[in-house]
Image 1 (cartoon, one colour):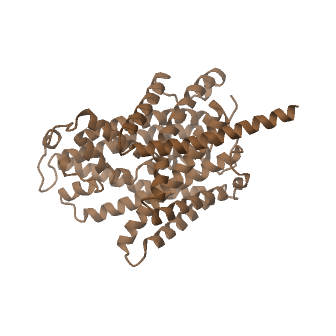
Image 2 (image 1 turned 180 degrees about the horizontal axis):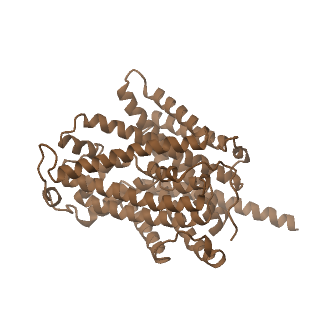
Image 3 (image 1 turned 180 degrees about the vertical axis):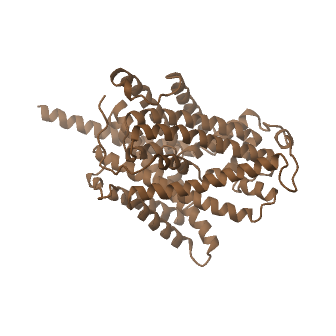
Length: 460
């Protein structure tokens, strides 16, 4: 087992930056707004849906944390896949994840611009998109320490909002707020019971919420730019996953305890509904600000993750070498510009053709996260044995109950994909994402064949 090569990037991120980066990448509009769709299909059982989806995300992050603590690299799981399975795997998972992030950038930038346009109707939505993209490109081109600091405060604001919501919500549940009385379990057991749609509803809820946990992976990408990569990534992974599970499950439990699940409407924030019900003034406006900050934070973190992933691909000869240019401050500026350029194209497609061209793009990345997670699990199965045999001292963070929980996670991912295929609403995502993954695998295979052909010719 060889030590990871020294990264030419700056090592300026502190442990608190990494922890908040993990939180910032995953706590977004999917929680504050999208959770309403999950409640509509699962009822109070959405709490179990979040527990199942969160447990799967925790297992993936534990595997990723184990490998990243042993072998920190800016490409994280792309580098691990290459070492475990070969160049084709590193190429495939790296480019698929980059594609996922730059398309999601468009959703975040457009969502934030839509909120900003509501506050300042005189400025068109496209202008807000332009302003936001320019601002965050500048932030990512600056010293990485500045990026870490800005993301720290963005994420801190979101975490503060969730903590305040939990405190107010629990107080309302027990009737401790003025004008409220203890609600008991009426909303959990009424309107069809805790599982109004049975376990099928819980499973449908998992399909809705599992992708809300995407973004946690960025913390392991950032580890390579921290002061002590191995130790910091282990600590950041431990704290981030537990906090996120607590925030997601806790806030959902508060929502379905305080309000009847039948009052939820997809597209409308359950958080606003709860704050309105307990008499918080201007709840809608407050939540608009929180969602706006959440979108900006996720945009910032995803642009960072995309630039580091494509930089890592260039380091290993899987992307143009021109992307390797690094500024004096240790920032891969060309990689940032390449990522934001494609992100900008995605935004334009979203603004111009949201229901056609961009919808196809969005479907093409809809299930990619599951493919990425599956390759992380397979890589961990291969690398764990190798590390134990060659450099066991590098295993500072270990996967629980190895290899059984790794196999269980793989089985759960396969089950989610099968269920998505059987659901008319999610089937297009699996098919388009499968096509995108297949295309990348074909390119990876062609590159492998070409490389081996060239090597054979040189031997002759």
